[in-house]
Length: 435
Image (cartoon, rainbow, N blue to C red):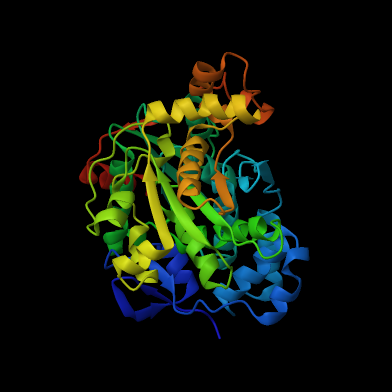
């Protein structure tokens, strides 16, 4: 029986997979969730440690989507999208790093973007007209989506990013592909970009006329493939060890994907949300009151989010009970000075190079282990250090980070971006002009 999806604001109303993925956002401004998230069957757990990442991904996606996608097609989508490794690196006893930057754009967003592009391609295989993919980015999402959808027939991509708040090489990944990729340089914050994207989906008639969909983590198809690598990390740990996953967090899609993995049966000791100064969720976990606020700029820019959209899904998973969420998720936050010091210190202590987001995660893991000395922490390292070259060279010296060819080749390409005011009416008018 095919999976159905409900809005977090209207649990009794359901849509099918195509509607949930292609329309992205329910008309009531909630977020879509699967009706059923059942534990994986016993036969999966009998040999799951011997499966490859794509093989695990297929079993996970099959369980979540049920019969919404034919098995052979779903297997093809997973194997084509998750075709790069996610190594688990042990730096010290019980202290691990899960490297998620080995995809085409050197960021964990490759898992979700590549899966989404192929799933959307299958869902629209018989449709006429152009699919317009909107995405707000604070750094890595835009590059991953641009790469995944570049020159895909029947699609065009519009990327909104905050002016002056992404690294130089991140910006080049967003603005140099051309073809069916258009970049808008918004004079504001990531929250402004996200607000502009979400506002268009609430204009239902226009969204349908322009055949709009979103590639942000508001889209449920982004989260499903991000759950794959939690299983991948856990299977590489010693038998009987339950990992504590430490997740650098901004919009909280990555952490929500981990919670989906747990609902599918993965045994997890605890989840730790690591944030920079944008500490809305850690504050909520401590005090029980959710107070979104304007984001502030930091060197860990992908986490500069003041109103995390996936908080709605987290609430839904925990039945809107603060105590239940707090029992499974801990939260810590750190400023730029602490992040910079961690980058330098961990390089000296272990020889490992952490970029700013991973450094925030490592700090949270250290703090958690002080409280829980027996914990096996797995820090999700979400991007390659070369994407933040200015910060890395300031802390570790010029030439300390080798730039992979697929990034280095962008340096001399010309940026092409359209200036955009953070105004909903202006943005909507521009979208309509695209036709």
